[in-house]
Image 1: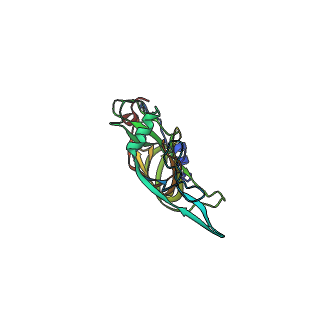
Image 2: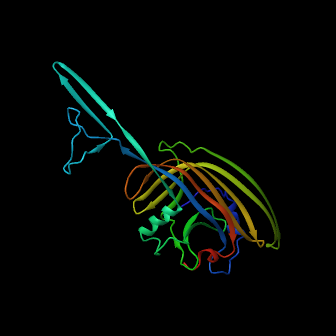
Image 3: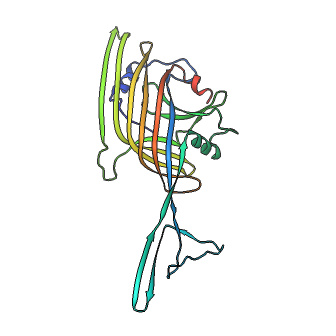
Length: 274
């Protein structure tokens, strides 16, 4: 599960040559807030089924049958007139963190009697750009939900490359004496924009959302050889198909954000006991 592989050999270099073991319950990394604000639009039928003469008919329950359109013909003498109608309407609903947590609870993934106090954190470890998602609540065991939330690079089915831009600013000064690292100065900031997909999958609820994600990464240094990559991202959702427990093929728009990334010298202070 990779959001962007933008470390461009830098993360590999640091992980291989600079990273030192961390004596803690969990390794050092970065923790960020995850949020989403979606508007789900459902297409609903706006009229009722007609018979061949254009008259409304009723079903077995003696109620009219909803539909999005009809065609019928009326014959008068030697004149036949054809009619066609399309009538649909839309219903909108909000889908944010609250709704996400409720779906996770209903699916038994969030194991609690209430969603109060729960949040979703985006976690990276060391110099890795891979993002994992965790359910977090103070005093409760955290739950890895990366199988249910997932950023992934997206390319058109025809194999066309995704639209992207890239900028990088880096400065590394390293002093070694007898192959021992003595000092390190480090400055690194990258920004990318790539057409990306974000998947939500909670026992059939969710779907695939698409947008041009803006990923900003920078490096923090804890002690000379402990390097942490912080990732923040914003993704305006341009289009997407979404399924809920009640309806399928719902149109989705809105935004997804990973924000406020902070260095955590020991991830257990955020995630507690896993």
